[in-house]
Amino acid sequence: MGLFKKIGSIFHDDWCRKCQTKMEEKKRQLYMLPMTVGHYSSHSDANYYKKNLIKVNKKADIPVGKYACGIIKYKCPKCGYKITKLSIFLPVREQEKYEDSIYFENGELDDFIRESERA
Image (cartoon, rainbow, N blue to C red):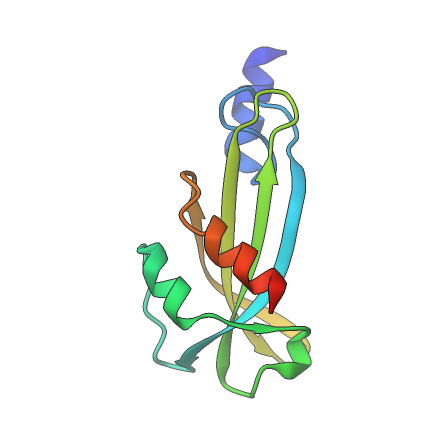
C-alpha cells in the first residue's frame, strides 16, 4: 500500500509529498496577471507574483485576453507539510486554457496571501 500511495502522490497535487496523505485545502483565491494573450512567460520567482498579481473575486472580473492565476494553499494534517500551488490559465469562452503550474514549498507567498485576505 505504501508504494501505491507514494506513486499516487506524484500525480495528485493535493497529496503530501512527504507522507502521502491527502492534504487539506487551507486557502483558495483567484488573481489576474498583467500578461496578455501571446505574451505569457513562466516565472519561478515568488517576488514576481507578489508584485504583479491582482486579486479578483470571479473569472468574469478578468478582462478578455488577460491571464488568470488560481492560488491554492495546502497543508498536510498528518505531518504539517505545506505547499502553495499557482495555476496559470487563460479564461477563454467559459473554459480555462492552462499554461503552467508553479509550486512554492517554503512559504514564499504566505505574507502576500495574508495581505490579500485583508484587502
